[in-house]
Length: 299
Image (cartoon, rainbow, N blue to C red):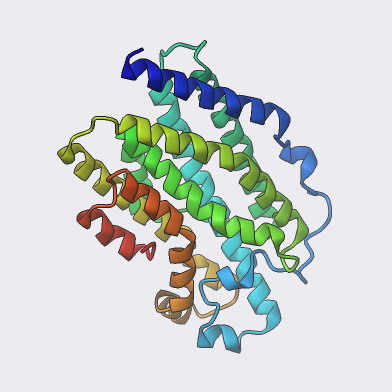
């Protein structure tokens, strides 16, 4: 059996396991999430410790009601950014499997993942609306670069970028879904996303490793930089600066203190420790890439 045959067999086995898992443990947000109960404003929208202002002097001056409103707006912004990237993800995966063997378990898993992401995007949209938030969107530069990325990224660049976005969300959402201070319907949304995204992350890791088999130094250097730039725009787009105005805060002061907030930076770095180890093991944590990961506070 050739090396290619071995990889194909391993890839197929992984896809079959993921398909089996999807059959036994998947959710329908339409029925699983409590959409009918009115929003209870006594709850946060996310764990307060994950707020961009938590630990700042501005946070200390805010009333409990303002703090809760801010975390609700921030949670809605993260959800909106998630929708934006999930649309990029779906297009990259569709391009990757275009005209390939539909009997291949990997092909079938790719379609299953896309179906999951469609449900997740609708779930996030309804969740943001219920949190009383406007339609937050990434800044124009990020949107246009995303347009190029989704049309051109392939192989390890596509799957490593997918992994970065999913890993960052995964860690914070694991905190939110266990936190009884967070409004119950958001906890349910986070639980659904964490369970189903764990399969997506497994596939993205396998695909990244496989696509890098035999890759030369120049290719690794180039794709490492591409992934790091994409990661910077994904992470820096998570909390739209408009959340502060919608929470009734002074936007200029809030943005200034959020940018200097060492607590939030530490939360991001700790959430990405395992991810950075994985990228390093694949040769995708280069000196040039590290510059952008540091700008995104992931290192």
